[in-house]
Image (tube, rainbow, N blue to C red):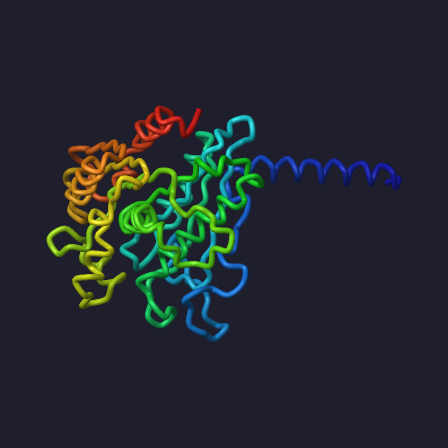
Length: 307
């Protein structure tokens, strides 16, 4: 074969590969961002052998927290962005099912999505395990805002989304933003512009909470003060971000009263809140009810987060 023919063929193969890669690109993360390029705050010094543990779409240990980026097609981009906190009782992270799948759905609807691989509370790995997930959520919001131009988003349209225990984390980020637990030299606003909570754990009060999430985050015998601090229905002010709540009435794992208590406190503090309660569906209903995002995207449009 002549050299120039060979070069031509090589170019065609490369072009074909680029097309193939490009076609599949939106289906996987465009980028993975290290949450802390330098020292991870509140982390104990560990042997280098300590790594993230994952498998079957679940994270079982997170030593190095990160953000996975899913961007909408440019012509479809609305300027809105969300940080997604998947659930898992603060014991595992349902990363694929609640994180990545949701991110793709948001990106398809013009919203940039950042899936948070947050540190699971762990006394072996952290000095104070109760604050690690919140530090990571605050850092995620900070990074997304500070890189708004890079990702083609509006820094004033950055929301947080959380499922189950991830809903507790998201609602903690939405009610504890006034006290930064991370280094924030630029004084970046850590308040999410809106919050979307899906069958969330809200309360740490005995009668309401999800026992495993509470123990995993706060330990076996938390003080009343710590219990109240992380009962997010008690932390609402009139500056809490507008909220979208959704839950199934027959949820046997995380009682729907978590969402109802939060709704009532938000309403009494004059915070805009919309709630969708399905009569049936149980915990994790999003896996069985694929149209659950329809009213959510309608809410985002109505509130001008999206076009």
